[in-house]
Amino acid sequence: MTDQGRNTSHADCPVALTIAGSDSGGGAGIQADLKTFTVLGVYGMSAITAVTAQNTVEVADVEVLPASAVTAQIDAVMSDIGCDAAKTGMLATAEIVEAVAEAVRRWEVPNLVVDPVMIAKSGHKLLADDACETLRTRLLPLAVVVTPNTREAEVLTGHAISGPEDILSAARELCCTGCRAVLIKGGHLAGDCDDYLYQAGDDAATVLPGQRIKTTNTHGTGCTFSAVLAAGLALGASVLESAWLAKHFVTLAIAEALPLGSGHGPTNHIAAAEALRERLKPNE
Amino acid sequence: MTDQGRNTSHADCPVALTIAGSDSGGGAGIQADLKTFTVLGVYGMSAITAVTAQNTVEVADVEVLPASAVTAQIDAVMSDIGCDAAKTGMLATAEIVEAVAEAVRRWEVPNLVVDPVMIAKSGHKLLADDACETLRTRLLPLAVVVTPNTREAEVLTGHAISGPEDILSAARELCCTGCRAVLIKGGHLAGDCDDYLYQAGDDAATVLPGQRIKTTNTHGTGCTFSAVLAAGLALGASVLESAWLAKHFVTLAIAEALPLGSGHGPTNHIAAAEALRERLKPNE
Figure 1 (tube, each protein chain N blue to C red):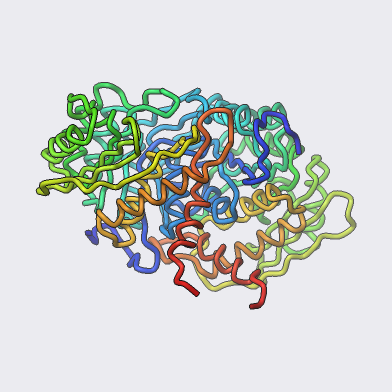
Figure 2: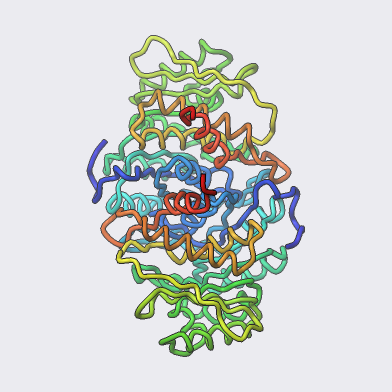
């Protein structure tokens, strides 16, 4: 954690920054991130990379912002407020990935979670093809933890993933970029929804076991997962503790997902936080 | 309330839409609105009009979106999800005001709260001069309630306001545009922070009394106020009930405001909601 760019102690209220796209439907993007930060007691800020016109069915319009506008947003908040953790989501273009990496490095942004968002739940491409390599070489080295699903891990490594052994080898390979940990989400594989946390230097990955919930209302699960991780780190938890928190939170948010819209409905951040609080209550 | 464009019942989770600017610092704009909706148990969606690079001191950069992109966002969410209430904040240009009025009319958006945002706490102009008249003639007639502070009410009516009598006459005049109620916030006048709710056809305004809190951390109070109003209406409360809720919530949010940044710090949505819940608890 660095004190650069911070004018106040955040002890009373940890601060997290999301650098991502805007989802008008409110289920993913900076909207999901800010909701997640808020229900976990973390003050949320944002640098928007692209404004989408989106609902539970489709991405109807995308306005990508100039890279200079993304830099201006990060500079505005880091120069005045600072942050205890940050996450990246949809970065849209190679220019924006470059700009974000430059700003993260310049401000020494602490506890960076990189969610290598590539494709929306509805199938819409959210990262230009030529931006994947920039993301791998420029941004991954700055991350405390990177959170690809198996498809994103396949694109980033160039190797097919069909089971736990492939996941461990992909995670090891991604750690060679310089990031400190890789969390690969197994939800797209057949069977259970186990996730795998590999920390640089370890022999094995920690399995975060999960059971598949029968629902199509999973819009924004990836955004929410990485937002909980960032919130956990902002609150002072370790990467492993934050990963467990993220796994539990997202499972509860899917279980309580909202049947809104006619496509993939959004997960329920409010109910997930309430359920978590209920579980953590001391016996009376 | 209309059912147009709604695919599901929102009974389990009321839905509110904010049409406003983005504040990277997280204290105002759609960020304040989404945080407010969330802590009050309302599902939040957004249509972004402009992306600002902003902190507690200044607005460093503004990227205004094309009016067509604002329409696309409103269309995306209204065609698939619908909403139980909506609010407008920073609308930036006359073209965007026109586009928002057209979309609100076409989708028969229910329970519209219009916050006629003109100037940021830091002094930056957020609405073009030629857009004020468009806002008055095109958008105000569609509102259930309009929430100017005294300065905005002066601009909208063209008359100086120096006390409660001027406020009542300004509120009556604004109601002639066709909106159903006007809530004028008295915080910029000397003395206490009383607000005034005037409902069309009434003889007098209801005074919502408030005491001035000694703090400079008031960034986003106006956005938060109108967001609570919209959330209240989405939850099924009356305009008067929602106005009381907004007055109490914002007072608590200012009392617990966060000392973040070196300018006007943001109000505290999380603490305000907790304090409200504590007050509403039955005696044990």
